[in-house]
Length: 268
Ligand SMILES: NC(=O)C1=CN([C@@H]2O[C@H](COP(=O)(O)OP(=O)(O)OC[C@H]3O[C@@H](n4cnc5c(N)ncnc54)[C@H](O)[C@@H]3O)[C@@H](O)[C@H]2O)C=CC1
Ligand SMILES: O=C(O)[C@@H]1CCC=N1
Image 1 (cartoon, rainbow, N blue to C red):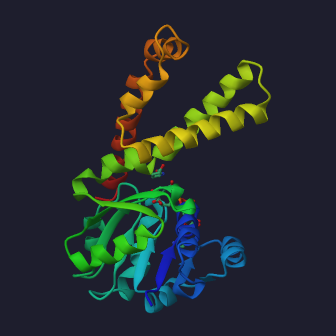
Image 2: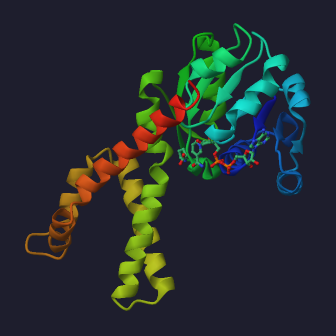
Image 3: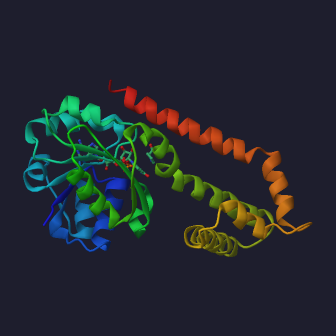
């Protein structure tokens, strides 16, 4: 039995616990630490997973998954330093933080794997990218990959690509939610009842996502199939182009990448 402890059970920490439980792990294989006692009680009531002190987490867990905000990392590393060694395995989910930060703050030889997951892990559809630090072996990567594969898909990338990954798939669900929100607003503008607009757009999003995942067709081909000559869709596409939506997405994702780089630099 591999015991996994999530250090900092906020949005992504909870998504991981929920996803691992849904993926077949038992509550006894999971632990978490949480600085807010009421949050801890809420999670234990919801999932039956024990909230513990970091000392107990380090003693009992095979994998320590750090899921605090990047700005809160220093006290966590200070707490962990006396409790971990080369036989531990630390997994960081934190945007921007390089494995070298952990390696500097923790005792020599502690293996660290950097991961950028995303919130669809609550429904078993996460996209996670893993990168080993300098003391992490192929076995460590395999263990982390196996853990993440129960909550979605996993790729391995060189750590130098993690800031770009963070901007693309880490934040990615937020861009889709934003688009869905705006499209529902469009339905309201056109006079549809909100409930109807929501159903139309959410099912269109689910259907489009399934086509992307299952048909193996390029998105351009799928879009062309919807865009009839002198039809309705091309009028909408012209407006999207006129308003620079493609350029806005490129700039937005570049800005997210830059922020990830900046978050890492704050701890140099
Ligand atoms: N929310 C998301 O979609 C994603 C978040 N991440 C990363 O995951 C990390 C957490 O993000 P969120 O879950 O969104 O933030 P959050 O603020 O919801 O969760 C952080 C949790 O850590 C707890 N915490 C802070 N310091 C602690 C300490 N010393 N000991 C125990 N608990 C402590 C907080 O009380 C909070 O519940 C961040 O580093 C973020 O970059 C990565 C991928 C996606
Ligand atoms: O917005 C953030 O900083 C985190 C990292 C990726 C998704 N959410």
